[in-house]
Length: 334
Image (cartoon, rainbow, N blue to C red; front, side):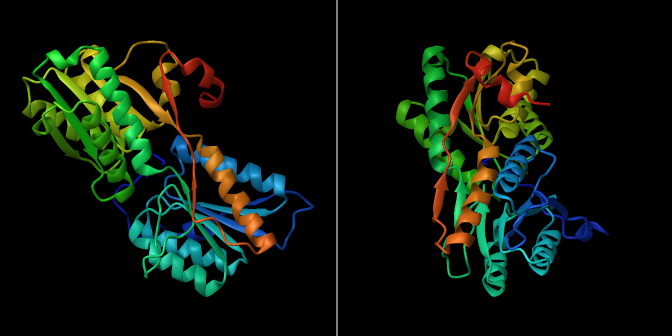
């Protein structure tokens, strides 16, 4: 989330979807010379709803035409959509790839078509290992924020006196961005708590949706019945919330769980009722700003013929039960 949301790619292109590319025309006065495409991988997720919404809003402000498509982790549809947008005359594409292995392919397609390309959320590279211009999180840095906050909670709650604390590192092991977030969390935690035994980390694979995390963490809890205190980190809110939900299902009280997510997408539902939860916080990124910034960078590059910046990082704010009220209006829009 990320933000890097990844699950198994599906390669069969659903019939008719290629023709379903949504087109937003900014206004009757749109600059027909500037048409931009926006491809995302998980359109129904709150993160991407906000991200694409931000892109559409910025496109409207700038007076350009924006084509959008949710490819639902489908690699074939991603490439077909890319070609469709190029054929429809876009001068730039922002893309959230369903798999980083597609990076060299889309980079080559963009180069051949002579269009601008920017990667959002997940960084990608050309076939000769050059980074495609990227906007999103600094994966390791935001992971370190998570690890530092969990270490702070570990100490403040007095968990150092317990011998049954385990860390559940919930990992989308196929997604490099996700793994960098987890590695950052681990590094920061052990810098703050150097005496914690690394043998007490359990690496739990999942394929990104919350349901996968619930299932795999439940298996881990069943295999470790004597562990009464759990710390979870993952690459997004869904991974951590899946871990927390698994502990709830197993009857482990919320005060015995520390989970800190990344992206803030589940904060409204989790903190909106004001009840304590093992999900202690989330590093919130305003994905709408990512979408808007991607469109603005592409537009300015088209208009001014300037190179896109290699990296544009967004910063994170920690949302907790206590700080949630100041984020409520932004996170709980219907």
